Image 1 (spheres, rainbow, N blue to C red):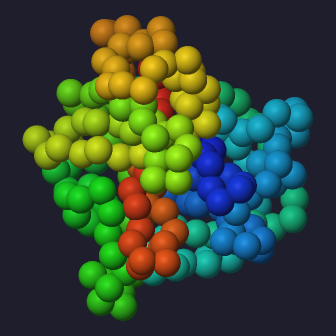
Image 2: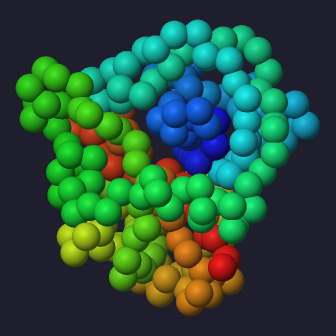
Length: 221
């Protein structure tokens, strides 16, 4: 599969990507609490953690769909192998046909959905790939008092404000002040393409599932 996200998830990681044969989304999960992945799961045969744009070979045992995450598959206990890494130009060519144009994002135009709104039926998709427009970054403080980065953007004319859980992008923005910053920060240029892998998180105690920017892909032209 093409890895498109290796993001933070409840003390572990959430990895997701597109199968190369069908271009369908897959979210490999473990048998640990909440299905989170730890280092031994997502470390490749070269000793490095899998990263977005890596083409990797993994073994999955069986589908484990959930009402808010139908793309979940249980991992088999075998190492992940790196095939190769896509260049930026390859990624643009391969991924552009898979972009979601909006304005509806994972079932609604809000930053979350409620399990009750699904009426007992699984959501049709909890993962998608977009090219955000009118993008800016808001470095702020979460309700728990931690540093938080949010992406403010439009999709198909609809406004969104969504939490970013991409650890690599958090590190890049780590020195920025608590404020709203332009799209072109930390080496991003006006000509670069930016794609987001968007994921729906697990249900909170409130029954809400938040939409998350699981990966920020900066692709120089």
